[in-house]
Image (tube, rainbow, N blue to C red; front, side):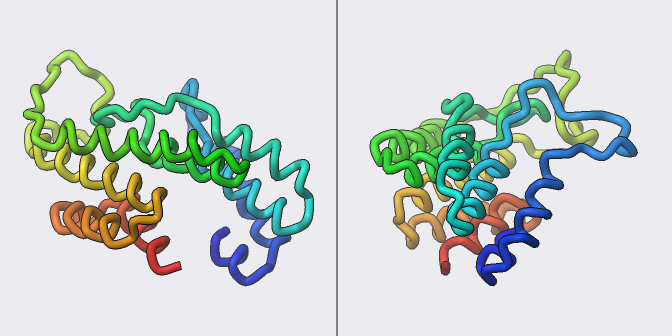
Length: 190
């Protein structure tokens, strides 16, 4: 989607983003209840805006700005992912509401700073851990990755590119397979 958006091939980008909203039947399960699609709505809004369809773009930016704006530890599969809050902030920027945008980005930074050195205590009755390797994973390391990722997202949103890169680099060093870090690190040089 981003590739086609950058190439100004808006119809191709629109076709791909529309596919993001549909969960294929063959997956055997649908969307989680309350799943946020801030990123999809944001990018679809960007496509509409680029196509000159400003009213549709604004409606999508409003949708992208909604949802829970308080970060969580994101240790369980149904926890809201922090990038959803990041895209809320980007949507607020598109709507000209810098105060709410900065609020979202600063919440990500504040949460990361506050919880960076938390010690994880396993809830053995939890049924929603995302990995089956609960006995092998270092949950404290995962927490450090998560907090550095949050701080990177927050600084990226605020335009502090060097700080964002620094936090993404730390998170990547701890977990070089973190998709969110890989995706959002690419936004630094654009």
